[in-house]
Image 1: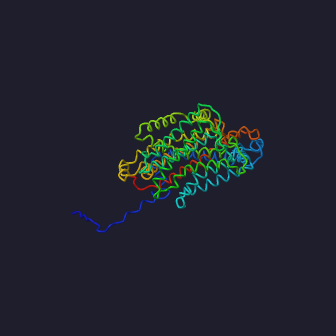
Image 2: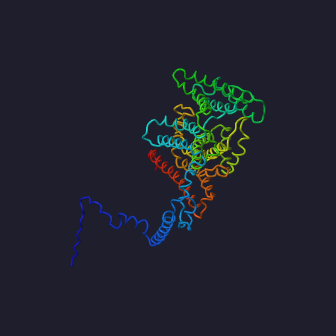
Image 3: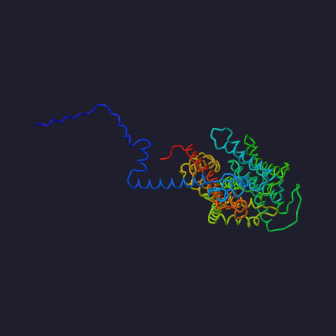
Length: 499
């Protein structure tokens, strides 16, 4: 019997058959990810049982058996009506203290106004579609800190001669950096050399004033020591010389107004901070709660990023002295625990300040936190700088850009974009580390919550757990918000070069 074999060859393209129903939809996803093998099935069942048990117990403690209202501890005790759950009545009774600390009740509108301004200005920077980014940045980073400081403290600061000399020395340094970046000026101009020499004299005089005690000289209604007066006058001479050099270089159409911005900013700052606006003074030892946490965290974040950029650039500098100083700074602060830094800032920082310059306890902590976080930030940014291809540097040099133009317009934008996760990770760690200021007597959010445990009116078995969970939730909200926004920024700035 002859076997007949028939072959069929299709000449048309056949569409792919749909996947079987058991592999699509929610059922298919669950089967593929949770029950693909017998081992996965057993682990998924055990994990599901544990999750259901944990969620039910947490829900039962936080909602079912919780107490949401009450005037004292009796409401949260089992004998007084409680069921052993969370004591949210404690949070409600202490909520104002957790947010404002012991800030005077009649003056808490200042904090509210500062937070409203902060939210508006941050939203203006964070939302890409909103206009006037440059103006918003100036308001946020230059105007808002001064206005907030006056609001929260009441203003009317009394500046000593040493503090005034230090401010003008900083203005002179900024102006020197700006003018020397001009290709036609550089460091070879005689006026710039005079400015640098006067600035060094000002720095030496203000440092020596730490160790030399002398009389007091009243000049321009400020009290100077002889050395601090020399420092102030040298800083003014430095400013004048460098401004003259910049004026001669830009008089044919350059931005002349920028030359006077540092000195003008110092004069305006001193005027605003010393003016009486009719606000009752509130000392920083009354600050606390979430407000203090935000002050420490935002100050550390705002100061650590530019300091970290400068340190990272200095560590990669070709100048041996600059590189050595930056390496020593970074390695020292990274090798010391933050607790030690806070103690050093609290007790040793006043010893390094010029005569007449004094910091209160909060400002010492802010300086310590900023320097500590700047060292970590510098290493994050250095990683981004090392990831930039060498051709980018060579291309910038071929365009005859100055060092600062090259870094500002080409290198740093790319480097910062690459290390956004590391930068935000440092910010998140800094925000959580603010709780350590409690050890030097500053009552931040966590410290204020812990102080509430000692209130005899609210001592119950569930009060500590309730307060700590509340504090943990607040920290999580801020940290999670920073994390999600960093992911959004990464996606928005992604240029498609990833493999």
